[in-house]
Image (cartoon, rainbow, N blue to C red; front, side, top):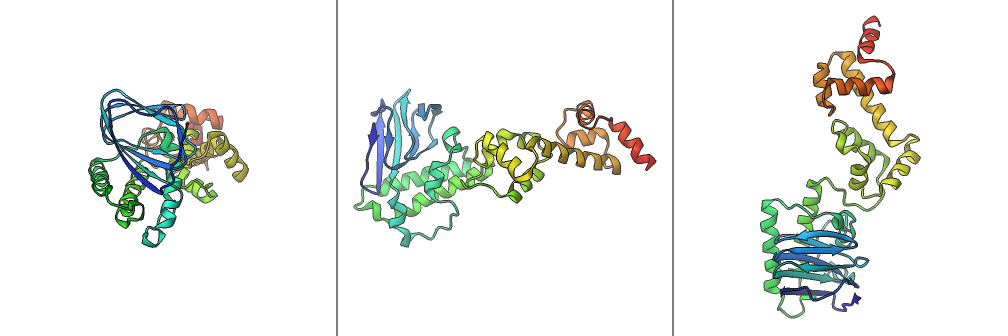
Length: 279
């Protein structure tokens, strides 16, 4: 089932005990804000629970439906590709990533945004502002509604950045990748392939191939070599005890660090110290 919309903007305030549609897709984008109720949201074979304050992003290629566990109230903000283009003269936003690209962001389909307390309250007020104004004529041409919707995307961008998710859908540059890895080298969980792929909004297999093609070394080998070089520098210059170095680089303890080093360098940290002292 495909729902079609010819108006560039439609605001729908739904209050119901059950969701009125089966699994369906759209010819438009849809922001769905939950004001009341709980249940499940089915989106492209992914299932997430919903509660008041949740915000969902549905783009043209998506299929979805809701399963209400209790009476629910949801606000649907539906807009077409032409909506922002038509009102460009009213827009002074400087987004590097358009609202349409944000709506298509893969990670926003796989997880729910975690708005902090100020943002939660602000988002709810924005939705209420839109509802208050939605009975006016020609809301599709209203700069007031436009700026309210831009405010939603501003909150989304800010929340995404706090969650360490990259918004831009383009391929990252070599310098951007290396800078991110170097900045997070002390946090092993942030240099794993699953985290890096999610951060740069690329599939894991593509990211691995992309990295090797650009740097002529595998991601795993690069990270290992860089970590080892930093560890060796700490040991050689006496910057901290073995325990402090282990803590700094995210190892469980000194033994974990020692085994890691020996497995990759075929010598112990003690041997490294002896070689350095003889030099």
